[in-house]
Length: 173
Image 1: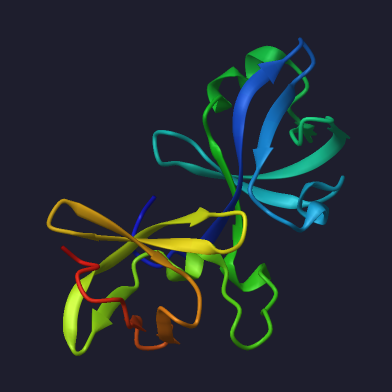
Image 2: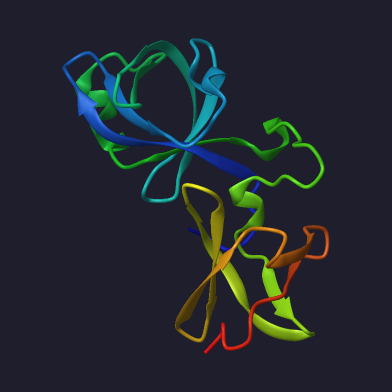
């Protein structure tokens, strides 16, 4: 996952082609199901780095949490085979704001982490746990997993791109 702030936010990934009529199986990374409703417009970001605007024509849900979508003007398998592995995204400005003190995972990726004015690394990932999430903090090839709870994370400042943490003695060793 990139560490720089992006203009678009990834909301899904095409995991495979389904059938002969242009259907695509999508793993979704959003809690807003309307992102994949008929008529919704997404950016399709190919593995080669190209971005194409697509409009959803039809959608079906699957019990396993995946969705099947078909894009407008793409009605044959041959047209969509090149999309396997592509990411689906929306413009960042389309993401609704969260209440104060809540953050989207994508907002935290790339944020610098400090403890007692000492740089500890950069958030490279978020791991969802059963009770709370963990910030994956990477520095010089080492990863540390900081619980994303108020006892550990004292301040989050997205405007200045930093997080202040307070960890127990020996945590970073």
